[in-house]
Amino acid sequence: MRSGVDASIPACQHPWKQDASGLQRGAASRLRIRTAVEASRPFELVRRPARGAIVIYLEDFAPGQKFVSTTLRVDSAAIKAFAAQFDPQPFHLDEDAARGSFFGGLAASGWHTAALTMRLLVESGFHPAGGIIGSRADELKWPRPVRPGDELHVEAEVLEARPSTSRPGQGFIKCRTTTLNQSGEAVQVLTMNLLVQGRPAQATTASPR
Figure 1 (spheres, rainbow, N blue to C red):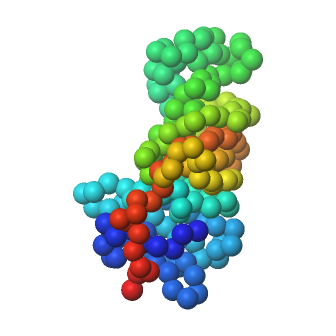
Figure 2 (cartoon, rainbow, N blue to C red; figure 1 turned 90 degrees about the horizontal axis):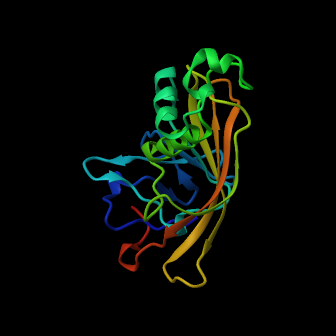
């Protein structure tokens, strides 16, 4: 993982600090990033007051990093509203119809689950430089349905980070996101490849004091 500090971020606001012993905990945050090597000493990202979330450049990503989102509760009204507009099948719209279906009860559309996953990633502070821009998905599955009252959170793991061979200053990360309910059961698994910007030359500085 790159240890340099973005010069545009004052030291007191930077998401992590480093000394000879390695990465140490920064300020409290809703987003936790943990590497396999530094599992006992995670560093955390924080939101910068009035300036938005701190971006994560390509050089800052490494396999084994894990991101954990906050929690979002899903209710029947939200399930029905999404389905009415985007997936108007009876088992997403009506409790009685849903009871007689494969699902045995009201269930959220899989695309609703995907949209909620995206919201959780964005609102938690997961901000790859340039935005969360997908280039392709290697896997998308819904092991079980989302039900009214479920509380969802997302756990994402970086599987790969590599520079682009054709676009200088850019690269890709492969990330597996698992959306779980309050019982720790997976309701969606998505493995995606994201386009990420590299660190601008002017943003590279010496180590923090």
